[in-house]
Image (tube, rainbow, N blue to C red):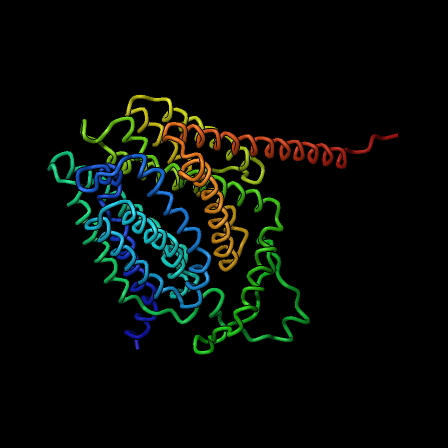
Length: 465
């Protein structure tokens, strides 16, 4: 009896450990910081113009096209099959990177990698369907932190192998292929969830007494809480009406964005993420332009490791910062967006690789800090289902904006700008974001001041006759 009770209590640990193993090995790719030098090196012999204007844009387009159908498919098939698909896509991507040659082959690689990033939603959603609510905070912390650990470890390992052991970029990619293959194997033994957030919800028993005689309990959450009791797991059944589910999703989205505060936080999320993705996608091209890998030893892996560590520290520190985020949050978005713009201008105008590295460290740390605040501000006011829906929609909008940037700025069918001019555009882009939120924060502070003045007048004591 005691053994059975212990198994039920520890049931969250098994899937969490497996998912953390999967997350670590999918991010343990020591070749990642050296992708551009590898593509321009003797193995592939591509030019920076081919990589920038013809190869990398494919990832943005495929990610955008695949994201929404995969978002719905992930929930419908209950996560695990999509995680397996992601693991398989990783393997295909690295096989192409190792053995395929030419621009069309690398475009195919970028399309497959678009599948990898689009299916990432399954990794961050799966765990909530197999553990109880009381463990959400723990498992979220474990699953998100292990990806940072994996990426940091891979970046340090890659840098050490390149700088000290003289290992070629080709063999770094072999190590990455082995790592993602281990992740694929671990995904096969994940437990299959019996429920999901939208298509396979728990069936609830509608209590006439509670709904008709007892009012809903209000809380800080602006949504109406669901006080209806849930039945056993055996009564969970999928909703067969796909159109009805889509209608409910649209209805939930409308409620999510009806809050002005959440609307502006989501706006920053989408705008900043679009710019961040562009910078991350093309920063190695800028580094290669400033300091070609053939001329000297590069330290991309070390920089990525340090930037990830600083991003993790800044994200962690948010939990200990005591601020009235409703009043000053959008001012913080404006200030740090301006810092991001300045760091991009520093990278763009610098002819020294170390100044480029320093600008990148500042940029990534600021973004990680702000995206953590934005995530917290949105999540604290929404249920898990609506948060996942809003997360997906914000990501989709960000990708749409990123696609517009790519078509106009990067793609040969648009302006096809060189990498220096591109980063000038990205710096200006974040300067515009900063301006938007400076204006918005100014209105908030003025409104707050007027409200305080009105309150003081209302509570002012009457003077005696």
